[in-house]
Every structure is written in C-alpha cells, then in structure tokens.
Image (cartoon, rainbow, N blue to C red; front, side, top):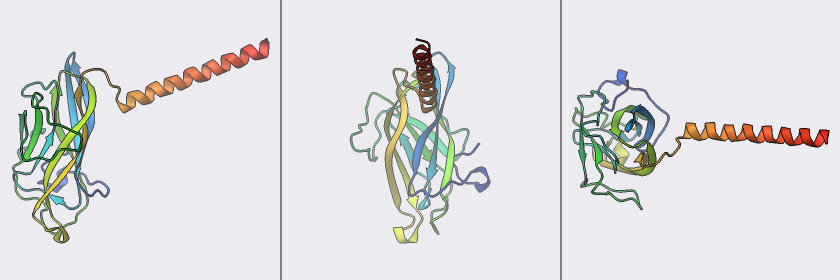
Length: 203
C-alpha cells in the first residue's frame, strides 16, 4: 500500500498535475456497530517536498476512537491527536472546535524532494482513524510542506488549506450511495411512465 512517507519512490504512485497538497476521504469501512474506519488519500503537489516536522492536520474528527489513528505502519510518520492545533491556518468560515480531536500526521523522515523541482505530483494514502460515527460532513484540513521550486524560494515552508469529509452524526449518503439512489429513482420513474402509458392505451 502506498504511504505518506515518501522515502522510497517504488512504494508510491504518481498522479497528474497538481499545484498543492489535496486531501480527500478515500473510503469508510464499517467494522461493526459504532465503529467506522475513515481512510484518507492525498496528493503532494509538484512544487512540494517534505522535511522533518512537516505535517497534515485534519480538523474536528468527531467520535474519534482513542488509539485508532494510523499511518499504516509508516515509520517516517508520527501520529497524534490534539483538541486545539497551533501554528495552523484554517479554511475561511471553518473553526477548530476545542471539544473535538484533530488528527495530526507529522513527517519525521529524511528530506524528500525539497530542491530541484517541480516534480510530478505524488499520490499518497494509508492515513486513517476510526470513529463511532458513520455520517460525514465537510471540515478543514491544513498541510505544512516544503517548497522545492527554485522560482518559489525552495526549501522554505508551504502552507495549504482546504476541506475534507470527517465523521458526523446522522447517515449522510456517500457519492456511491447517492448514485445508487438516483438510479433507483430513475427506474421507478420509468416504470411509472410505462404503467401510465399502458393505462392510456387500454382505456
């Protein structure tokens, strides 16, 4: 499985162009009642590298199950949770709720593609945590990475903010579920139209 590490090029896959880190919810695995694993993936942009201390914060991971945060065994990533994160930037309109834990993934490995860029964008995954909640809502993420492009002051800090799905109360259908529901509604509509036509023809 690809990892955040990024120390061994053979262990990762390359993606299309991207200008900055992007984090998305890859999947939710149901482990039983009140136990859901949220799996995250992302892309490191062409102008971004990593140095020790760079990090990713996913804010307000509601229903967090203690001890469940994981970087899929990657020894170059330290995992932790904190209720209030400092030295971060939030997406406009988002707040860091001090009553809900934030997931923190901190890179601790050697410098990785910090100079000589830009490079091809790099996908990573293997970041996860478990929650007692199976619904989702959008909340903020923050990344601290390192610029590698000589035209952008290489080996200096780069910051990125955005939104990502996190656990929330209530069953909010995921995209695949929405597609199935819409397909079902379409079939019901088609069947209803056929039935109405048949009634008109035989009346």
